[in-house]
Amino acid sequence: MPLVPTPLDAVHLGARVVVRSRLDPLREAPHDGPSMTDAVGTLLSRSETEVVVATRHGDVTIPVDRIVAAKEVPPRPSRRGAAHLAVSVDDLQRVMGPAWGAVERERLGDWELRASSGFTQRGNSVLPVGSPGLPLSDAVDRVEQWYAVRGLPAKVALAGPVGFEPGDDPLGAELLDRGWTAADRTLTLTAATGTVAGGPATAGPTDATARSAGAEPEVRITPDLDDAWLDAYALSRPLDRQVAARVLTGSPAQLFASIAVGGGLAQRLGLDTPASRDPRPVAVGRLAVAGGWAGIAAVWTAPAMRGRGLATRITRSLAARAGADGIRLIHLQVEADNATAIRVYERLGFERHSSYVYLTAPRG
Image (cartoon, rainbow, N blue to C red; front, side):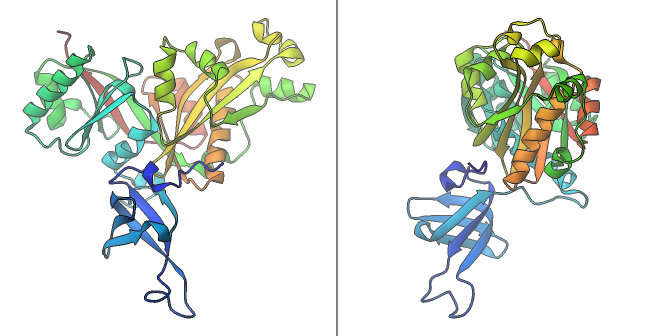
């Protein structure tokens, strides 16, 4: 099953899309020429009978019954260079927003307010890209009120170049003046999916031992979130299972990867865990598709299995699956002080694109 959602109703308005449609044989299609055409641009509107795409040559209205295929594609590059680095900070934030679900999403102008009962900072913060449609001070008032109603601290994910200072941004300065605190700087890393998926895998002790035993642990990838995957992920952080499931399945499309070790293989690896009797995931990861990009998240390995290359294998396997479905660009987020993870991802071909900082309102 392809990752890219083909129904146009799975794509949000304002996204950049390519829509392939049949030409009218009586008016548009030449007798001996092409019978189809592509419209590339911003999805302006859609109805039961037609969609409108803003292209470089003007708005194009396409009858729904002539659409052959449609998909969301990455934003236009904002500068020269490798495609994964040429996208602007704001456009990449727009791409990453839908790649992590939220129980509630509400618009404030161009900003997006997200709430998920406190599960993850991404799922409970404002994505402040574009204009809120209000004076900045009034917009922050609305944000504080919105989160207060939900019993959550108001939080904003403020993005900028790697190492930027929040106080140099007008919104950051406004929040800091109000007593908000800045913490949890996160790096956004990007790459070409082919780079991450290709090349010889980094073989840790688990890989080497398993190969010598003739039973290398398999990376299982499924579009469905199952209990075993969620059980493993729950070991990485406290969570409400119902809320977490809604967030983890809240993207336009997602895949869940896991490596389970059990039976004789677990014994040969010297694992004295319940997994030796009943195979259970000891490493997991998630990939989501939005904005024409793939996004890696929720990568976790059981403490007893770390340093054995499992996270690398999961990341490469997910990137390979995305690449097989025609997705050429990939992103992930990692805490800026997690030097070990950053080294792993940079060895895989990821590069530092930008960063963001969470600013949180004072309680009460």
